[in-house]
Image (tube, rainbow, N blue to C red; front, side, top):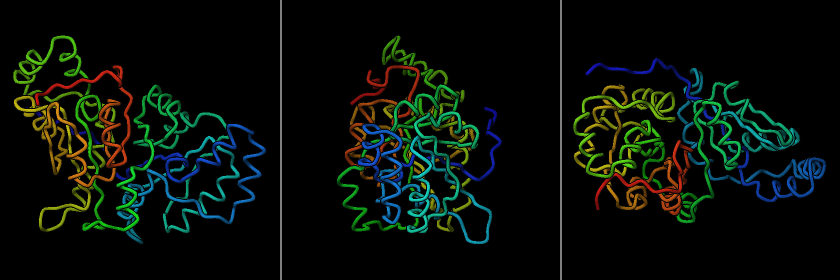
Length: 321
């Protein structure tokens, strides 16, 4: 089996909407109901008020903490907002207040930010605007729609209950997220038995890359290696949480080997719920392509829906209980 790594280099570039990064629910409502001028005036009135953290804040903060003073950045974050440029003052001041090294951004006054994702060279765009996420995906870039901060997670965050305070832990689904949806389509068309037979027969043939397998995972793997400790544990911890189980698990491992992107944990849960496993991993964010998994996961960890080629509300469970 030949290796087929993607030639990537750091930094990892993450784009994040201001409403995902900060709590802007009331401000966004004003923008939608009363328009640009009312929104701009509200931002001018509140320029001295620091924005509260949003759902993407914890993982963005941890990723940025990987940068070392005086060294080239290994992670870069770009703010993207459909809101007025007036928000830029408050947004960047809030970043400075939280000591977050975020200095780049795009503010479009109501127009889609999708055209700017490729312009910035962004590896993954996080937003709570599903239309922008869909537009970004249609343009050929990786994106995920994230919801509200889970209550339990918010409580743990507020109390700073994290024994590995310098780690960033990212959990990913396999098919149609890290890998292509080819195997999912076989399962959907022919059922579990044929799916398992196909995966056994092709165990040594690497799968094609899915949206987060193209540059996001390869760059995460570079970060993982860069921050590997002498005890074999890295500050960047990667988990695969997939509905596959044995024997379909082997192709996952063989594909990751072929790509040169090893992970720290792999959980082959079959048709069981993913949320308990994600709670146990203490992931800072999880990505999946199916609404049912994202909805369940979002009760315990921040979760992002990665739009795929099939109906995300139509559950695919290529595994057994």
